[in-house]
Image 1 (cartoon, rainbow, N blue to C red):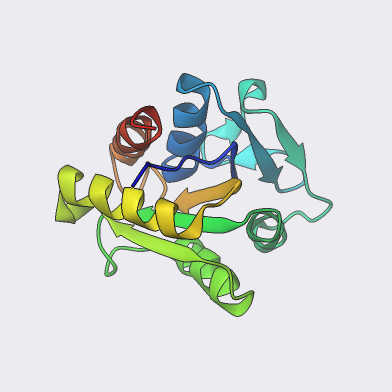
Image 2 (image 1 turned 90 degrees about the horizontal axis):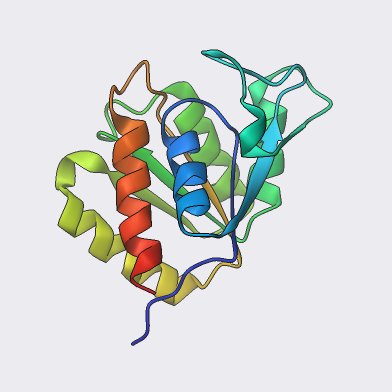
Length: 159
């Protein structure tokens, strides 16, 4: 079966998994963007303009998270493990489940090859046009941004 890749990747622009997803989209020539809270703030300051983020009218992360889930066809969430998933990651999973949107949780501790296979299989089955990428922040899961980018570049380039 032929691999599937979305036309667009969106996220909340936070450091870590969010930016890893956007960086993979940029590297693979996909459309990208998403919603950030009012003020365009992330844990490292203002979200860089290169990510093409739009400001949500709310100051908190809950509103932008709900908007990104709602604007996508499916959500892909990354963390080292379920035990290390922070409140923002759990909030994203909760919104996706409540909206009955396809959602896949990737535990990076499972290993790169297993995760690439799992994502390929899920994308073929779900076939999202717009993919929301979310997960742990860089401060709570050092190196996640690069790991997510590298995994998704491999997935998207295989198509």
